Amino acid sequence: MADDGILETSGGDDAADGGSQPRPQSLMLAFFGNHVLEQGDLCVYSGSIIEVLGRVGVGEQAVRSTLTRMVNRGLLQRKREGRRMYFGLTPQATAVLHDGRNRVWRQGAVNDDWDGSWTLLGFSLPDSWKRQRHDLRSQLTWSGFGALYSGLWIAPGHVDVSSIVAELGLAAHVKIFHAQADQATDIELMIRDTWDLESIAARYVTFDKRWTAHLGADTGDDPIGTRLLLVSEWLGTIRTDPRLPARHLPPAWPARAAQETFRKVADQTEEPAARMARELLDTARLA
Image (cartoon, rainbow, N blue to C red):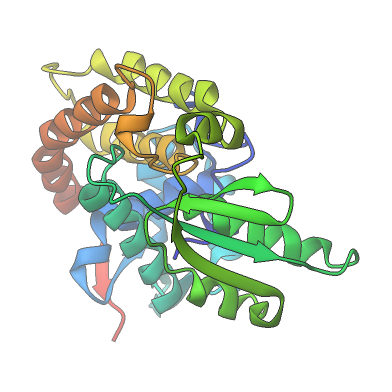
């Protein structure tokens, strides 16, 4: 599961357009996903984090306030060694980052394997439950759902959202079904009516255009910053894409080209960024 509030990449206030500057918390999560997630109980000195995020335009005060906020939200944990403060992932943030990694590297942005099934989720919440309604819709959007009708949401494939519903405490107000469309249903029309395909496509085109320039280019003296921006912007691009079945999308759907560009630049920057991280980052063990 990925928490919309944790990722802070929806609603147009982050990198969802593939070209705007990601917010500090999204960059912070990308930093920990790149350099800490697979290292177990590793934690990083705050000064190292300030230096790396400074390379992508985040000021020291913004980094410090973001670290404090993420600790307060249960996403990061502190460890003091002498006068230095180190930060590491909590189980909650680890789960979020593993979910994001699965979305980026395993699922990908192109759904060529759709089996014809749909997941439908119906809900009815009291009018006063505005926050719960917002949280549910945000989680559903990340999970690939679109609003078929106001209280009936739909996603391609067999999507397990039971844990999301349970964590939000809404199990008594939600009904979930798995089904296939009748032949009388025009699936392509339903998709166009349910999701804003033009906006989704535009984000991929913008991302592809922005990052194609990096293909084959020298990563220069800042591969760690380049990769940090790359991953943050790609997550901002794909997070509102429901991975609709490719055969029901317009020809030359731009997600395929954008994904190829992302993976090529990611491969190009992986080792230089890792090498630079080993040189720059002051780390310790949480235990």
